[in-house]
Image (tube, rainbow, N blue to C red):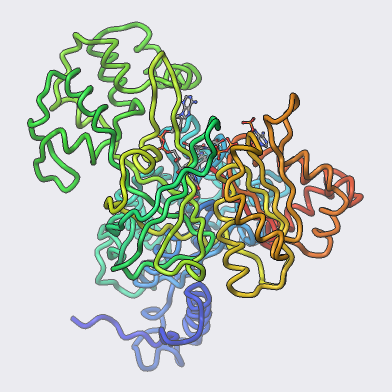
Length: 594
Ligand SMILES: Cc1cc2nc3c(=O)[nH]c(=O)nc-3n(C[C@H](O)[C@H](O)[C@H](O)COP(=O)(O)OP(=O)(O)OC[C@H]3O[C@@H](n4cnc5c(N)ncnc54)[C@H](O)[C@@H]3O)c2cc1C
Ligand SMILES: NC(=O)c1ccc[n+]([C@@H]2O[C@H](COP(=O)([O-])OP(=O)(O)OC[C@H]3O[C@@H](n4cnc5c(N)ncnc54)[C@H](OP(=O)(O)O)[C@@H]3O)[C@@H](O)[C@H]2O)c1
Ligand SMILES: Cc1cc2nc3c(=O)[nH]c(=O)nc-3n(C[C@H](O)[C@H](O)[C@H](O)COP(=O)(O)O)c2cc1C
């Protein structure tokens, strides 16, 4: 049987609109036609009902673009299944619209310690209001993106889901929580959520669809997370001078042979390989030779040594392994920390403790490789803020990577990906990469002034921004706050930054060396000292961007920014928060923090 003919005009793909504009306009056209009198709209097709599309709003909360990408994918799929879908960024989604929604899907990540991503912070605050109307006519479902390594896994998605329910909205499908390896859970939610909304809505009015509701959306093409590009490392240079406590690398990878391109603000995904010495130690602990076979990532049997090198995370202790060990050994401490309500104690137990320590503590557990491997998590790619502009370095991508090395429980520990890049690659080593688009972190308009706060590796995207603004002749003024431990050894990209200062691209530079004197001096101290001028820049429309450490620096910089808006901008604390919120909605305040 032929599918029903739709009378609804659809914009051609060649029309000069962004995907979001196209979806919105298509939705608008669909609305116009579907609500036309049955006699007019239904004349050729038989019934008006058969052409009516259900409205659907998909909102996303996203810090580094994953939820946004998935929201757009969902909208595309929804379009095929009889919905007129629009995608909305929570940064500009008016809370008043909630009560008017019929079908609402929320995809959001969680940041900080169970907090909303930056673009959803205003919405989250507004949602707490006691003056919100009932949402009894809203059908919805929530998909959370998170990482089970964090104590408050999908914390914001949980909070948001609970609040929508409390306001009377009808949850048509229970919340899905996706771990870093989100594909399977997200695809399942996508199919089920659209089916549930169809069923909950006026199903008879929806065109029949030939798409199986459980079928995942088509796989994206080109190089991506699932299909990374085999790039070659072409440079690996230490940026710190001898005597530094840090080992930050400038890395360059070739994009030759790929059609990969990136924009400044994007991140690069790197697929690491584990440390072979650690793999050998684990094999010894498991009394295995390494040739025993286990299931690989595509289900084919591979030697366990290869699986531990490339398929599984072998440092952080995964919860299934902890639970297995607690059960097998009967150990009281393990039983306590593995209990579902052991949040604080578990975090404490896991800090600085790796799988190798757990196996060493219980050598008689009898754990075999066949039991061990299925208890492990999949090895995840790491993201790095791209530190170059393609306009300045065609065919190359640069990274600025801080090598993670520390001591715990009397043992030297190595960060998986940063030491893979720093220590276990040589020139021409193959490195699997993909571009992670970060549309919520982009340079401002060319003539807009830009204030950048990027201590340590936080300098990475700002080096790229400066290269881009130089290459495009952007006229906006630039002000950089940079800092690290010591001027003598930790001034990353000193020559380039000085050159930009000398030739006028960098209008102002403030440096904060934390360990060159008795008292710590941080970037926010430099901001405070320049409060009046900083306010003048902001007042004249400058954008304010932050990159680097999320847990302390970015939080303290925001507090200082609020103080400056309050004092130099003569505002009340509430007024300063409102001003910052407007900066966020207007994309004048953007952060790339980790
Ligand atoms: C959007 C984004 C952009 C990023 N950009 C950059 C960038 O430009 N440059 C950069 O260097 N990094 C960047 N990162 C961080 C990067 O992705 C990795 O997290 C980092 O390189 C560490 O990965 P790893 O595999 O080397 O370490 P892992 O093996 O993942 O180990 C890191 C873990 O070790 C533990 N740990 C670390 N230090 C200690 C300690 N002293 N005591 C106890 N435990 C400790 C912590 O649990 C930590 O999570 C970015 C992250 C994101 C999300
Ligand atoms: N998730 C991960 O696995 C991972 C891996 C690597 C890095 N990171 C994060 O990325 C950050 C960046 O690392 P990095 O080595 O490039 O730089 P960094 O550790 O952030 O240090 C850069 C400078 O910031 C200073 N600083 C410390 N606390 C600060 C605060 N509250 N406010 C402002 N400045 C502060 C440091 O001073 P002092 O050190 O002298 O106090 C130093 O001078 C790390 O701090 C870490 O949190 C995360
Ligand atoms: C600094 C930082 C903090 C995070 N905090 C949490 C957290 O508290 N809970 C959680 O479940 N996931 C946390 N995550 C993981 C992200 O939510 C996850 O990577 C998500 O896929 C990101 O989606 P996005 O790109 O749309 O922002 C954190 C990630 C980073 C880099």
